[in-house]
Amino acid sequence: MEGHLVITEDEYLYYVDRALDGMAAIVAELGDEKANIRPLPGANSPYALLTHCLGVTSYWAGTLVSGREVARDRDAEFVSSGPVGPLLEKVREVRAKLADDVRAAVPADPLRGTPPDGFLGPDDVQTQGSALLHVYEELAQHHGQMEVLRDAIHAGAAA
Image (cartoon, one colour):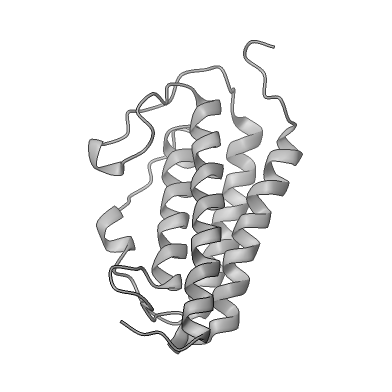
């Protein structure tokens, strides 16, 4: 099946949405104060982690798959903080654009740009399909990480 995804676009979006929905629900549940807590030394806050995931999604799908210019400050994502309402609205915006990007993707076609070295993606991402797989990889792993952060915050850990 050279050049074809092994799942449909809707199936891909289902799994991506599950991860995004899970992270958004955690941030919403924690609220403005707790979503910005870094519960363990060296850990990110749930707010910062979700901000990072939105940056990953916007850049890898928007720029590298769709060719849309997306300004991204990866380092700033990890130190971001703020109220959860606007962040949750950004989740909705990014999800809508991602759906368009996925439906316009040609999985076997080359990327529409070269990721900067500092973005720390996989070493051998060369196609639009592999960029979309990286988006899912990031969302799935960070969703699990955020569940641990939430549990630590609820347990009262604070760095």
